[in-house]
Length: 98
Image 1 (cartoon, rainbow, N blue to C red):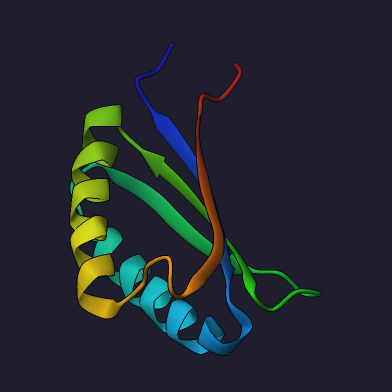
Image 2 (tube, rainbow, N blue to C red; image 1 turned 90 degrees about the vertical axis):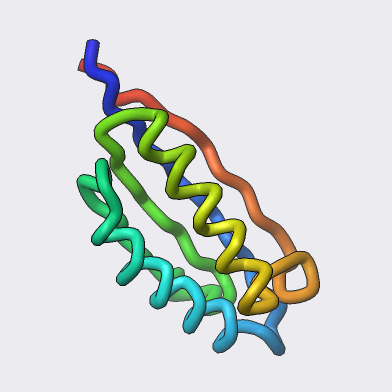
């Protein structure tokens, strides 16, 4: 079994904050791809509900993801990407079944 960690994150922006949320998520993608342990970080926007974003991330280890998550929280504080911009936010830590 691999130490690889997969994160699936669901972000539902408030309609009036959609462009802010999208901008912050795109910035996060650029930063994340340079981080140690990041295998991939893919951002998707729902075709029907433009306020819904899904991030799909793979990390070499859970420790790498935790380090990233702490950095991402700091970015949230700087960009006002918080409960005032979101209707819902969930993430799931996943393991690939082999």
